[in-house]
Length: 460
Image 1 (cartoon, one colour):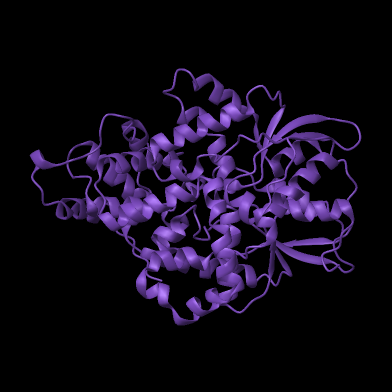
Image 2 (cartoon, one colour; image 1 turned 90 degrees about the vertical axis):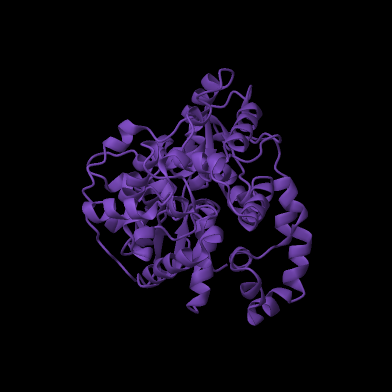
């Protein structure tokens, strides 16, 4: 791993030397929410962010650190350099994990800065045709579970007839397109459950009703991790919650929002708000970390929409991560051991849960409520696994290096089981566990709680 620590003077020289266009021809940010100069000025360039930034740790360049990107934002704002290929590649290398936000002693709101920059990039930087086509493929598929569901049949056949093993053994996709190969490499096992969409609109509480809560099914989650959604609903109802699942709900807008697809994100956010209107729920529960972070940002996403601004703020105020919610309201259902012997497990912190929503203690508290569970902590627990939404498809080399590090750190704990609260993390870690020849099961905390409530042991 290469690591460099350039000082401020070197950074300034890099900026001056990297831009050759004349000032009058520079193309920069437009006037629609550019990175806020006040937020930029709050950065004192201390460098505390460097050691926690995953892209900097892998790439080793100052411009691929939060501090370096803030320099670039400021220079583009001031008209000193252009928004071009040389600058955009450094913004693209950011995973958006927000570890720097947790680390920064000055409280720099880098999350707002990189979000504003990504929306600017997508509006004002003309990407190459292959890049546009690949991104179009991603944004036309993943946020739309109904469309994605149609692909399950050929993918199911692809796996069942052995084509997947053949393609992976020959490395054919890697030679054709590393990005398509990266997408295929995290494809989970498709089962008959992946085709089901049979949740009722209302699931009654078991015993005395304590709350009426909405549940968001997600996109990848509902297709490839449907058992997690089923477990979440059972856990909620077992703890006195009447569950509402609107049929009209779609994507939460996390994917397009994180990649600067402004209008698509707004459309999907409005649709989600509309789907829960008049449901009279006390809370809206989500079991995927990346989705939860975006749902809580609806007030910001729709801040310029006079019709939806207030609705978005009210919606976001009701959103709770499943772990967060259960700790807040209390677990009332009796929990049984998952195994006959003590079970050693390690909890994997998803970035948008840990850094984005500041939720770290609650999942651990829930897991420790299960009799016989022993939790271990990995080194570099706060380091991103490399999934980061679709980052592992757009930047596969950096993502693979991070995935290898994360998998090895989890393996080194000696845990018998890994638990993760985000589907993207689970797919990424599973890929790299297999590459290390390790067969360690990964389960969502809600799946473990569900089994503990129902008395179903892991090895039954």
